[in-house]
Image (cartoon, rainbow, N blue to C red; front, side):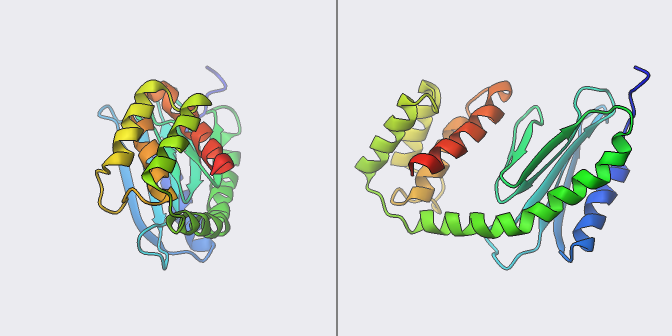
Length: 212
């Protein structure tokens, strides 16, 4: 269309790295991936932080074939689906490739980076509180049942989460605290189709914090 205006991948990548530096932050790692035809880009920049187990991240996407808009998401938790739908707990914004998109890209990148550190500190405290909140195996069953009853987890996700709660795949998530239960649920949600996963992930995150 006449209003279509592409955004160069290199420009977007440079905008993210420049903004990180301008905010006095240090880039730890930058992961980039392109589709086989070179028409889609996904990137994830992780910020160096004193907490070695977790790091704030700024994720971004772009396309040249009009299949998806420019997208930015940042936070302690950034959800990314197979179809490159993204959402961050600190910042999420999508912008179509229309007239004046270039005027907005720098602003959106700056907003994504600016939001990540203060919100990350809050989220880190929340995660630490969850790690120190002991719950029994039986209480975890009740919690999963509540999420199932509220429609947050469908039957497939519920069964995967239940199995993960009973016997975690990862040793760092023992079945004895709230953070482990949270991760059991996110493992279950990975079983959703890409078109449903993003909305469900965001819905779950809000619901879990509300009932926890």
